[in-house]
Amino acid sequence: MSFHPHPYGEISAQIEDPVEFINSLYRRLLDDRPYFPGDTNYTGACIDCVLEQLEAMGACTSFEEE
Image 1: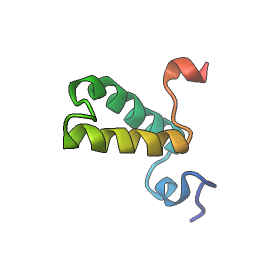
Image 2: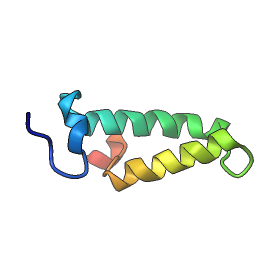
Image 3: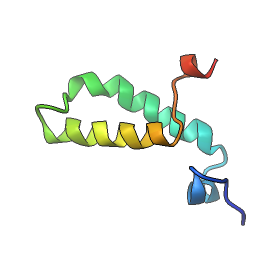
Image 4: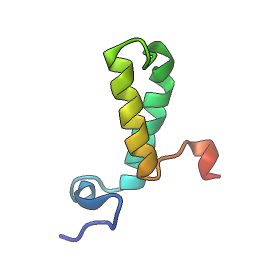
């Protein structure tokens, strides 16, 4: 089985559309981020780190895609 090129790698083995999967994770975390400020709790700090990684993979919101 072939994989999508960087940055998706092996994720495409199980996910049919890795771009939309990454973007949907990103949008969901952006929606939840205000409830977990990263500077005041561990969960927020983790969300901030994941958002950074998703951005590095090219994640964007629907508005940014247009």
